[in-house]
Image: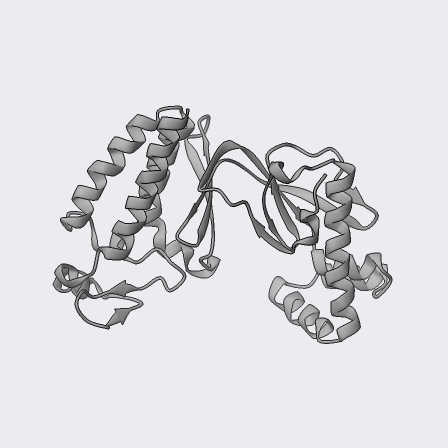
Length: 261
């Protein structure tokens, strides 16, 4: 077993992984740590648990301003990860990423409960990609013809704005999961041609990064939102550079996959 559990933030230094990936998160992580180490009582834990999410976040935020409480949470998280890694004998090469109270690994884990601390299986993915500062986790449910995509690096509160562009990625990754990487390559090549020719709806041209804006070519103007009229009148001025660079990198990873199978 390695020492990755000591890292509160970690991402495997690879471009992509095609393999089953399992995401385990600690349920109610902060207050679970405080309960585990005696900083709050079971009744207080119940009280915080039953609060609306925003109210709970505010209340726990106040507790974390107390240095001893904050230290207990941080040390508790590391200890919880150590327990998870040790008792499941998780090796470094099996770890895709660590996000404080969440661990992404390439196999199911048998031991996930440690006293008041419970790691819950939150997600299952088939493909991981690390592109231009974004971590992408993807799974296609063939039975229900639905997909699940998680993006680390763009706030969840604005991620929905990227659904048009993400649909391109999902269409390609679906083909990869089904074992047809060549079809994914051809699809991205075709979509790039349409993309740079501005043949797609304006919504596809929102830049796929944490800023989540439209960038107008040859000037320093950025727009968070466009009216329906502006989507038509300004479309020819919207820059394609950032997202086209992203698609180019995405395509290069697909080609790597095809030639390393």
